Amino acid sequence: MSVLKERAGIAMNVRVQLADVAPDRQVTLGALASVDELGSMLWHLKYGQDLRQRALHRASLLLASRITLNGRYRRGKSSFAKAAEEKKQGDAAADRSSLLVRFAERAIVEWVADQCSACGGRGMLGGGGRTTKRVDCKTCRPVRDAVDSRLRFSRWPIADRTLCPGCYGKGFYEEHPFADVPHLCTHCNGSGKEPINAAKRARALGVPLDQYHRRWADRFEWLMSILLQIDAEAEAQFERALRAR
Image (spheres, helix red, strand yellow):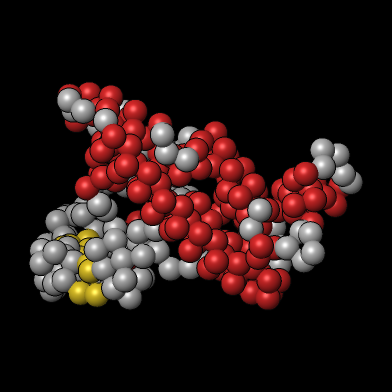
């Protein structure tokens, strides 16, 4: 994350204590107000941690509107563009418009939460500490199983028995078999990015998985590049606004 994005994130995030004491918070928010609306919404979601559903829905509508103006979906005149221009069309047009909004929303969600869920974006797991492993006590396990089976059909409690010398009545003991040495995250293969989940994408769009692979996989890659472009444009606008103040 660049310095400008970090500065904007601190100013936008009301949960951060530094936001209230930052002397240039008003200047930062004023410069952010001059950024394009879609770019500003995306920055609030990603860097300001504004995870409200209303903000996500608004950003999805803005992104879907921008997609309709892009030539990638035009064949003569895009059906999505026609649906955006005309106020009232049939159910088919409404379904296409809704699909486009779901497409934009899923792309925004992946762009905002792009860090690996297993390693937190580090690409590595393990910190060199000792792992603790619970091992079931084999000495008293048969006795405990027998007691448990009797308790199911008994109305009276069973008298206290002698504690197991191996686990002291806990039913397990702890082992420290090996050190948790740093190693490559197998979930993201060291990239630090959340892997693409085709099933979640297809479920978000409401289409079969095979249809996603045929028609939507390339479109997702294209839209993710568009989001990166919008992010870069918003940063340039934000920097120009700061210099003007």
